[in-house]
Each structure stands twice: as C-alpha cells, then as structure tokens.
Length: 69
Image 1 (cartoon, rainbow, N blue to C red):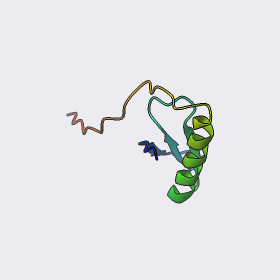
Image 2 (cartoon, rainbow, N blue to C red):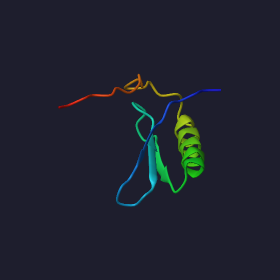
Image 3 (cartoon, rainbow, N blue to C red):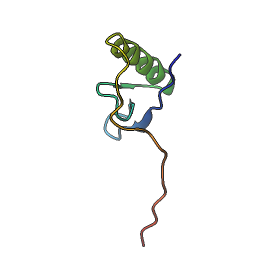
C-alpha cells in the first residue's frame, strides 16, 4: 500500500475543494466535499499507478506561516 500526501485548497470562485499531490504529474482533481475529493484523488492516483510508480518530482514537506507587517 502506498501513501501519498495531497495539498487541498478551496476555490473561491466555485467553492470546490481542489487537491493535488506535489511532484506527481496528473495527480489532481476536485470535489464538492472533502470526502468526494478524497475518493476522486484515490481514483486518479490508482489510474496513474497503472503505468508504474512514478519518480516524484517534488516531496511535500509541510507548511509555514509567514508574517508580513
């Protein structure tokens, strides 16, 4: 079983949740709920893995809070 970390944002125009796996070309999708987004991400990742496990171009590290005066 492989585990991938997805970045999730909410589109202000559509209200949809948008998710992508950093460094994994093509591993992105959207959904109306977080549960739907998770199902869609799982489906697209499984489909992409049919071509073999990719060499990720980037690795998710975390987030930072940046304070600007």
